[in-house]
Length: 439
Image 1 (spheres, rainbow, N blue to C red):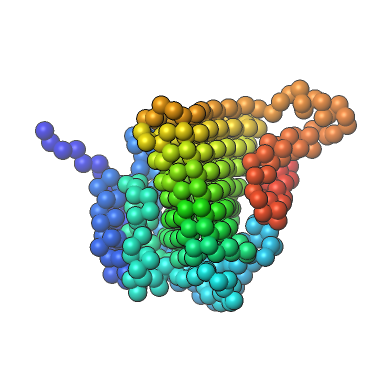
Image 2 (cartoon, helix red, strand yellow):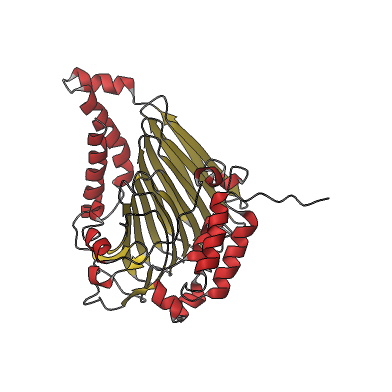
């Protein structure tokens, strides 16, 4: 029987040409890069016939591939000076990346706390840093094609290590700003190792100019040691024409505490995918997200929570607010391995539709191989409660203001779980600005 070959579209052809032109100058890890691009080339851009990408057909949504971004010039760095303000003005240690490249002069590298080390991924790859060579691509193995593309083209990013027992008081803030005035593709890759008993908070913010057509493929690999405590918050406020693909791969040790929150209010197409593996006993995790969309924006949150050890607890709660003809996708899978008895895992996704043209696709799944577990999932989608809206209006509150109060309460339930008060307030204010722009 003849083997069928999928015809490559324009974007796949451009990616192949870009790979041939760029592979010799990309920093380090040449065999790993080549193997990753070969994996991508075999399957191409993911499409609706791939179950995990059924609702986000990247082959249809990504009609072309942008050239790799050029190193930022003085003008680009000046435009990025105030980037990351969506996280508020808290006392964060900022590491700034402009058009995919680390910019030390905009970053806060002085007086590092004991036990904290920071560096550039590009430098680490070029120098074959053992921390990177031993862990990159191995934290949570995945054959995802978007991640393979990131591995092939990864340029810069952060390399962070928190030593055993260290408590880092100042949150770390990775600021990724797309500032160029020409279409470009940005591939960033970060690695964070948090050793046993350490505590740290990591914030990522991704933003870009509204008029610019650009593409982002970013990934973070995170290792959380036994009894460590890690808070992770990702804020996505990309430009109106941006394509944003993000992968979080986290391996979490025993008796650890892991909190992650994804907040999305911008970007033409956004996909946040989380691959989490609970590798040690007795870990507690809270995974949450809030998405606010308008126009024809498309946002996809895909989660795999893999319980591989005894007695872990995870809670997953995601909220989406959809206006105009926007679309949200939630795909969540909880896997409970045979040895992961006493697992307690519950997942919920809720969508609030503000117009008849909005669409919410929810696909929660359970894959359980153990018998002594408590697992559940649920999904809802609906409009604002007419009775509650009438109640507010009957007390003299104008309709738009009453709707805003209800929407803010709906989203706030997810945001309230953020422990850092300043960041929590900043995201609530960001939700308020989104509502104010709604008119």
